[in-house]
Image (tube, rainbow, N blue to C red; front, side, top):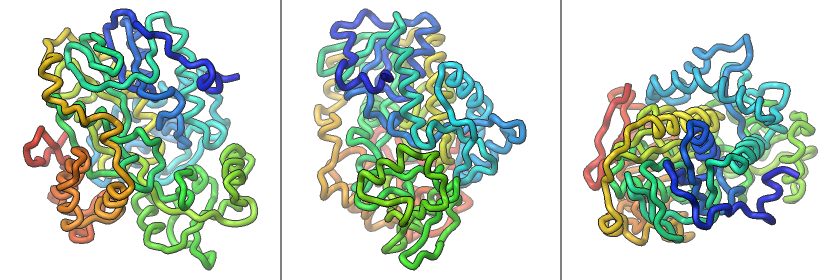
Length: 484
């Protein structure tokens, strides 16, 4: 029985009263687990805080693989070029260089841990070569998370606090949780993105950007909140994602007459809008070797579909949020003592549209880098105190209060979904939820269409915005910056 299969029964709350820590890691997805293991191996005492069970992270649910050059016929420069092209002229070149250089070593480490990657590399949209490492076709996130968790739970320098909600950040001091104050001079946020704010989403309900908002409230810069990737192939009327690997292995997108209507391996923003423009879109899985995706096919059959004999209805859903907390290439935020990695962080790696399967690679590469920096950086002075933090961060900034009701989620889908315009964004600026207001402000500032951000009132790319990132500092108006 795997470690993940044991989670619901045994639980992993090993640290009701954790020992003193050198580092707090908030979040237990691949970025957080990687950071914790890296720091512990450097000699740090680490406490991991997970607001829910360890098997509901977006990482755990990830079907996509890990993008990394592993074939002698491939080259990191090709991976770099594919990433830059998918990013639509907005990627931070230095971040892309780091990813393509370091991802192969991170995958090799996972193989050494025993992650059972498939023998053949997969092809996904936007990639010019087969370079995606998968497990059982579409079980990659589950397998990687299980391998990392097994090592985390066995490491004597790591304490795990499951079902612990961080209420406030205290940079340089620690955090305040619903179970009391935890102190540590450094904190790494690996809290994930905010795609669960939209009515159509592939994400777990807790993915509402809580860590991002809390970091903003203590002074961290945010960027690129308007850049949201909508996955094109999610089973209609559900959150069941049908991995891009299926299209890489030959699945077709067809209309009600069975006619193909798009290049299935075009970048996701292109495919998502093509699917969204049709009243009926179907993914025909009959050309695929279904044994390679046995678990996914089983879930489809359990839901009442017959993938071996008839196409499956699909529609787009919010899947990955490019924007988040601004960091350098070592996870440092603009607040001393506070670091971020994974989907909650923004290095500029993805540009305006994430290349398929670069996100798990990002978690591995930048989770490790954040931990190394947190261990090496000199101890910073506290930038906030328990008394001031309670006023800086309103009590309403919990995951429950950040979550939207059905009406608000539909409004976000309508006004900041696949297609936006100035009128819709203006409506969202009056939302009660702070992150929705910030998303709307960022989207209004990007007066063009680029990657995951498409405006019907500005339907083309503006060359003047090449390489520009929409940055938010506190309540000030967004500014445009270029990152090298």
